Image (cartoon, rainbow, N blue to C red; front, side):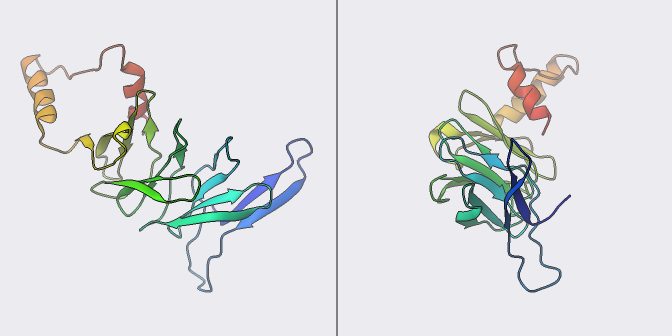
Length: 193
């Protein structure tokens, strides 16, 4: 069920350890639900969560208190994802994908979409990141360039890549382009967004 609490239990006994409650404010209709699955960082031990109050939190599992929080411009509805370099990726309903530093929540870079992002991004082992927005638009970012401003492709653009894909379909009797076997698993993951 959606709520504003993150609860920790002892894995051996199931007994209660602590709960972290997001302050919803004084208004009865305040929104602060935690919607995505928590991301646990095995290196620094933080638990990362996003909330409908527009914040991303790093929760210290020893005390059940937040160490830092970063405000986005919209609800966080999806799970946060962490890459092999510990960088955090979170989509927001403000139409922005954020890359955050795990130590302090500082924004490293942002990538804009045409509408809100309510699904977790998909990372590939070769440095790419795929994400989609609520209108079904897909985006492809080279995260090795350390910047979301390096958007390579989005499914609604009229770039040469999009045109090449349309031409392929026309010249091959309506057969749509499919990735080669080396990239097939990556494209199947994107299809699950």
